[in-house]
Image 1: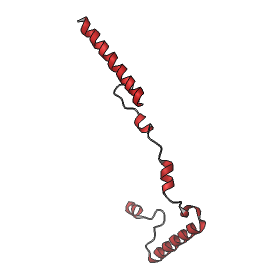
Image 2: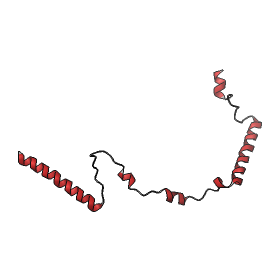
Image 3: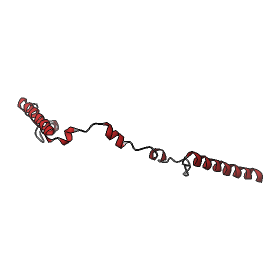
Length: 102
């Protein structure tokens, strides 16, 4: 009986040593927490934010005040046209929900 217990202890020590050696050789991280998940897989990835931002061209809409002013003017003129036809947004407190409560 004692030999099987000793064999079991030796087997676990040997397998632990082999896994530690394998981790050192191949650069793996051993999960010491048992069966719980760790964030190592996510953290070892390269950060891609810089590459993604370089891929897309610079947005002129954000920097040029003339472009923004033209867009705002178009929006206001379209809103004024809708209001003249009676299709604009209702005044605050006079929408569908307010008329249902009365």
